[in-house]
Amino acid sequence: MQKITKRSNFVLVKKGQPKRRDAALMELIAERLKELRSERGYSQEFVIERTKLNLPQYEAKHYPPTLDSLAILCKFYNIALDEFFAPMNYPPKENK
Image (cartoon, rainbow, N blue to C red; front, top):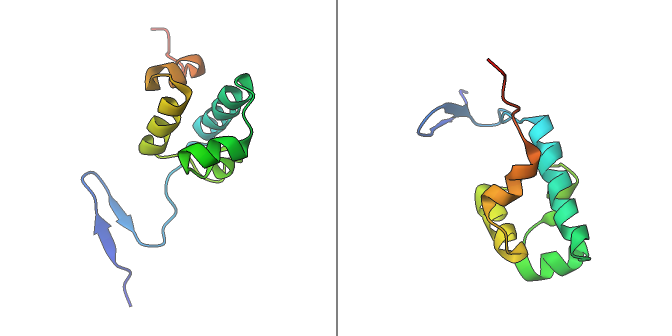
C-alpha cells in the first residue's frame, strides 16, 4: 500500500516522513523564549495561562513554535517579531 502524499504550495510531503528542522535555529528560539520570560520574572505557568501555548515544548526544543505562536508570544511580551529575532543574527551573513 502506497503512502498518501499531501501537496503544499512548494514541496511534496509524504505522510509519516520527518519534517526538516534546523537544530541551530531551534536552539536560538528556545533560548530567546527563556530569556524573554526570565527577564520579566515570569514562570512558564504564568505565560501558559495567558497565551494558551505549549511553552515547555518550545523551550525544551521538542518542536519549534509556529509563526502564529511566535506572534502571540511577541504580543504577550509587547515586542515585534523583528525584535524577537534581532539578537539571533541567524543565519550569519557571509562577507563577500
